Image (tube, rainbow, N blue to C red; front, side, top):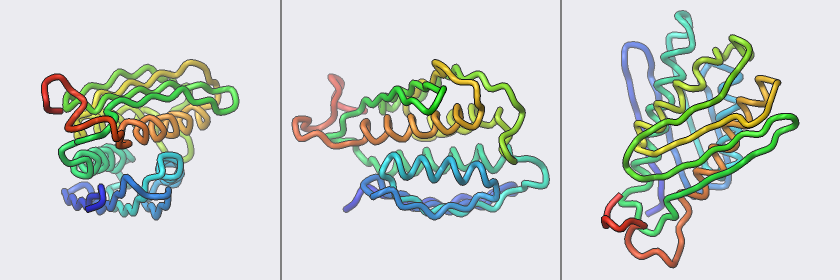
Length: 195
């Protein structure tokens, strides 16, 4: 069995279908209706070596909130499902990622205890059709649905496109590390015996 998940979530605000393979090659087929968000999720797939097929139909006539937040819920749920019992995974992952003038830190613990530490100052209301305040909402939804401890911090950066893209790429690299199997780990990496 591969470490994969298929999630379907339908509400009055969104209709989302997601296929996720944690052990992929970075292939992505992503359609959310928000061009910049598609670009960020494609970067996430490519740099984390995750295969993702994602279709989202959301109430974009209202704004981007429901589409972005619900996509985060579905992605987080898929990550949790694909990891299963978490046996032999490294559990921790981190990345300090440079992108031009931007430097972003991301650190993850797949502990089963959700938490988001977020310190990313953005200076514009939108990048393309993506409302920048939704960056935090997306990662909050991912962290709580997947039950991961997630810290994201902008260490440098002025261009909002670069900062957001650096954040998605840093998250991808940190998650790839945290989900990677380590042959030295038998069971789960915890003194409690469970994650």
